[in-house]
Length: 460
Image 1 (cartoon, one colour):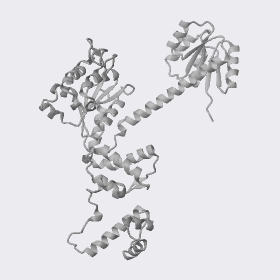
Image 2 (cartoon, one colour):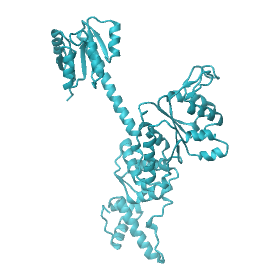
Image 3 (cartoon, one colour):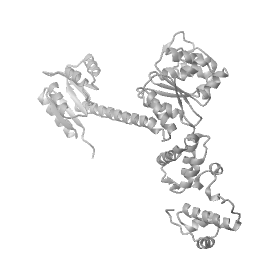
C-alpha cells in the first residue's frame, strides 16, 4: 500500500485552509493546517511533512519570516509559496530563501496539483541521487579492498591517514594489483567525495594529444581546435585527478605538470593567462620511477613532488592468505551480475588457486573466477572448472608418489581409487556421470568401487 503524502497548509484565511484541505484530502493527501508561521513552526517541531504550502501575507509571522526560520532548521520538506500580491521580485526572493515553487492567488486546482506533482518528482530525484551517491561511495570505499594479510591491512591504514589531506599520493605496484581501486578509495573516503573523480591513463593517450587533454586549449591554438576546451585539471576542480601510468608522461609535459602541482594553476594551449585549480592529484605507476630518474627519463623534482605520500600495493603472490577471501568476494559479485547460483568452491580448487603465483595479480584471479563460474554447470567450482593454464603448474597430491615405492600395480590401484573418489565428488555421487568422466563403462566402475571398497558420501 502506497504511503499517503503529508502536506502542511499555512494560511491565515480559514476559508482558504479548508478549501485546500478538502481538495487535497479528496486526492489522498494527509493534510494538516496552521494559521501562520509561528503555528507552523510549532507543528513542525512535532512531525515532518513531504510538502508545505505557505501563504506569504500573514499576521504575527509571515511567509518570508517563516522561510528564514526554516532555513536554520533541519527541515527537508519541499516548500511552495502562495500570494495574491505576488511579483516576480517576490517570487525570486522566496526562491533564494529556499522555496521550490511559487503560485499566484487566485489559482485553479490544476495549478496546485501540477506544482505538487513537480515537487514530488523533485523529491524522488533527490532520493534517487542520494541513494546513487551512497552506492557509489560504498562501491569505491576502502571496505572493498579485500584482504586480512598484514600487507593489505597496512595499505588500508595508509588510505585512512592520507584521505583528508591535499598532498600528492604516489601508488606503486604491478599491473593488476588494484592501484585505481586504492585511488578511488582515497577519494571517496575524503572530504572531496561529493566532487569529481577523474581517472586518466597517461600511457593510453597519444603524446600529441596528452597536453590538450590534461590542460585544455583555446580555439585556434592548433589545427582542429575549433572551440575552447577544458582539460582534465579544470574538469576535476575541487575534486580528485588520478593519473595512472604517470611514468609514461613525456618529458616536455613533466615541467608543466610540476608547475600545476606547485602553483595550483594551469595554462591552456594557446592561452596567455593561467587558471587557478584546486585539485587533489593521485598518481600511479608500475615502473620503478627512481630508476627512471637515474636514467634521465623522469624529472627528479617532479618525482619528489609526486611521492609525498607513497603507497605500495604488494603483488598477490606476496599476500596469498587473501586469495580465499578474494575468491568468495568474486563469487558473490558475479552471482549478482550474471544471475548465477555458484555457492562455493571445492577445497581442491581453492588449494590450486592459492598456490598459483598470479602474474596478472587480482585482475587475473577475478577473470579466472568469472570465466569458471559462467562455464561450470554446477553449484560448486571444482578443479575441472579451472583453466588448464592454471592447473598445469600445480602439483596436486593426487599424483604424489610415495618415496621408495616402485610397485606399478600398487600405485595404479591407489591412483584409480583417488580418481574414482574425485569423479564421484564432482558429480555428487552419480555413478553413471562419474563413469563418463572417468571414460570407463558403468559396469567397470561398479566393479572397481567394490574392488577398492569405496564408500562415497556426498559430504566428503
